[in-house]
Each structure stands twice: as structure tokens, then as C-alpha cells.
Image 1 (cartoon, rainbow, N blue to C red):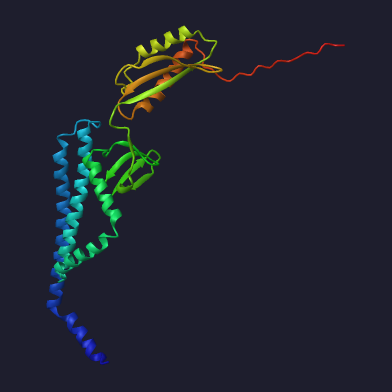
Image 2: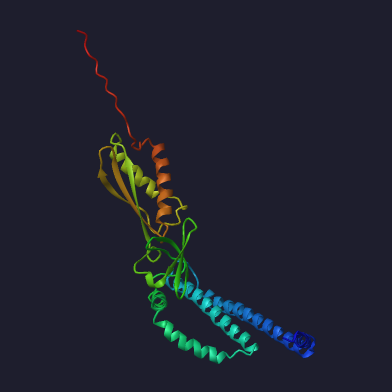
Length: 288
């Protein structure tokens, strides 16, 4: 091998001013393409958000729930399309035959499609989830073992953020059953337990008095709670049941606050909450 000729060739390429100009031009074009892609994505997302902002009034409206979902989906779709176009433009700058790649990708996609049925199933299922408004971004749902708030509905997967911070990523095609807590108002069901030694009529009167004078702090309420009556008589307690209609997903928060305040109210009025008691009976033997 003639190393001197190879070295001369390399030196000629390096010292060739036209090569450096061409390389610099391509680098500038690539940077320009990337900047344009970033600007288009940001401007496009801003326009999409602006389109939906005018119609957003409250979190629990079904129309707004769908708007939030479509907003996220459109933003993701815009990002995919712009980045894909930018990649093709960059490849063109390197004299890569983009049309040939696209044609090959079409043939390859047809071949791979038969083995990618799960992917197609995920995309179709995601479309019907949005089209039928089964659930939307911001809804509190249970899908299988995942219980939490829907953070994102994509073309292929759905992301659910649980209360403890976990994020479940579920393929849309595997979603067969959904429990949506955010569509209708919630019903808080609270069992109030009192001791048998308590005057039952007085306890009932006090519970009704407490319900009638609930403070404005209970913003979750849709209507005044209802005392159903005596729900059960167990071996050691009397159980009253109270129900209350709340805004979606707030029935648990309301129940916790209601139980605490009612317990304090009953304590002030001498109503005893049952607790385990032990009776000790001692037998004395007579002397012979």
C-alpha cells in the first residue's frame, strides 16, 4: 500500500477550502432545520392550547374532559410529524435517497405489519377510547390494578398516576374494563356507630342537628346529607347510616372530614362511641 499517496489524498481533502465551505453550509442548514422544527412545535402547541383555552370552564364537564385529552393527543401528533419531517430534511442534506427509504419502509412495514398486530390493536383501541369518551385526561379511574389519575392518553399507551406517585403505563389494547369515578357525582356512605347505653332518639336528633348546620367548609357537597336511619344492630353497637352526594371523586375526602367533625360534636353532647369493654367476674368460694 502506498502510504504517501493516501496521506497526500487526506491532506488534499483537509486543505480543500471547498470541502470546508460545503461542510459548514450543511452544518448551518442542519442547525437551521432543527431550530425551525423546535419553533414550529412550540408555536403549534401554543396555537393548539389557545384554541382550547376559550372553552375550558370547569374540570368536571364532559366536553372539557375530552378537550384535555384531544389537546394532549394533538400536541404529541404535532411533535411526531415535525420531528419526522426534520429527520428527513437532515438526511436530504447528506444526499441520502429519502424516497428510496420511504419506499423501503412501506414494503418493510407491510411485512412487519403481520407481526405487529398488538401495535395496531393498541392504536385502534386508543382511537375508540377517545371517540367514545370512555375516560379523559384528568379523570380518576381504575384499570385493572392501576388506580389513579389519567395523565396522558397516547396513540399506543395510557399513563395513570397513582396516589403514591407510581405511574402505570398501560397498552391501550389491553384495556378491557374501566371504572371511571369522574363522570357522575359521588355518593359518600358513612356508618355512625354508637353504644347501646346511648339514648337512640337523642343520638338521632343530634345527628340530624349536625347535618342541618353544616358549615360552608364542605364545598364538596352537592346536596344536604341524608340520615337513612338505623342500618344495623350488632352485638355491641347501633349503626346509623348517613349518605351524601358530592362532586365527582370527592366522596372520600368529604367522608373523612364529616366523620371527624361529627365525632367531636357527639363528644360535646355526651354521646359515647362504642369501644371494647372487658367485664371481670370473680367467684368467691365459701369456707367449709
